[in-house]
Length: 98
Image 1 (tube, rainbow, N blue to C red):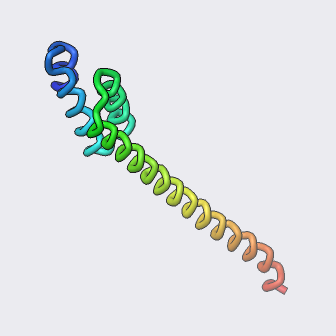
Image 2 (cartoon, rainbow, N blue to C red; image 1 turned 180 degrees about the vertical axis):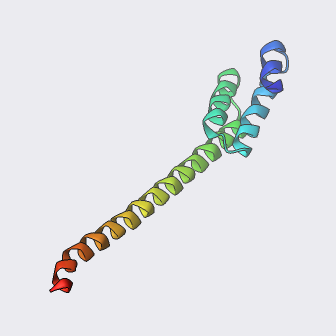
Image 3 (cartoon, rainbow, N blue to C red; image 1 turned 30 degrees about the vertical axis):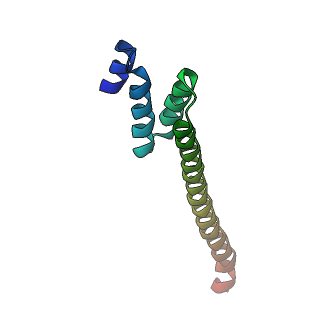
C-alpha cells in the first residue's frame, strides 16, 4: 500500500515503485496484480528486465492454473469412483439377500 501511494504521489520515482510493486506481487504469488504493474511499467518505458519478469509471471500463473485443474480433476475422479462403487454395491444388495 505504501508503494502504491508513493507511485501516485511521487512522479519522479514512479517507475521504480511500479517495478517493485510488480516484483513484490510476483513473489507473493499475486500474479494478476504483478502483470498489471508490469504492463504499467512497460507503458512508461520499454525494459528487458520487466519483460522477463512479465514472462516469468505468465509462466508461474499458467503453472498455478494447471495445478488447480489437476487437483479438481483428481477430486472429480475420486468422487466418480466412490459414486460408481456405491451404485455397484446397491445393485448387488438384492442378489446378496436371496
